[in-house]
Amino acid sequence: MASWNSIPLEITYQVLGWIAFASWTIAGYPQVILNFRRKSVVGWNFDFVVLNITKQSFYLIYNATLYFSSAVQKQYFDKYGYGEMIPVAANDVAFSTHTVLLNLFGLFQIATYERGGQSISKITIGIVSVVYLTAGVCFFIALPTHSWLWMISVFNSIQVFLASIKYTPQVFMNFKRKSTDGFSIGNILLDFSGGIANCAQMTVQSIDQRFLEELLWKYREDTASPVK
Image 1 (cartoon, rainbow, N blue to C red):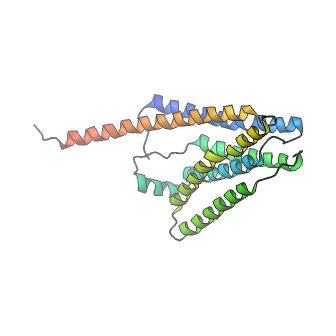
Image 2 (cartoon, rainbow, N blue to C red):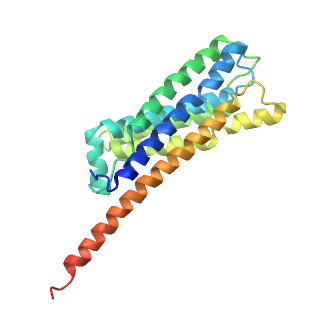
């Protein structure tokens, strides 16, 4: 596995990672607290909740597998080279584990608090059904050859897709009601902040590894030059 070339960049990477972890971790609490205070989940779109927990579950599988499984890491290095770094940090695993548990608690609130006639739409049920069916098919395709890296890469693509659409039901509901009552804006602000920190973290890693590539290229040029 590649090592860091710059200690300041490594420190920056870790700091940004834990900033993203803190922002994303705290992001779920304003909504949970709001639900608890109101003893109601009216205004919190159930489609958003279901899409989000599905997304986070696939994100957890991807992070935990790539971070802990030596077999999957070997497949990653075989495909991308041993000079590459594993693109998952400890904060990614910690965040995804925490957020899945928090979302499960959110489902508990939905089951126990006033719902006001809200329900999960057939469209969301269809999307989630297709997602889990796709995941099952991928598992059985990967099983004979142990192509786990390919499988979790598909899972990661699924979570990216869900991340791009999960807020749509909530936005539509807010527009239809002409109100955001029951939905915490703190969730949006913290989620956005965490995303910015995470993108910055990946940028820092890319800068550091690009520096390594330039050193290797220069070394190859120097060794290939004729001796004078």
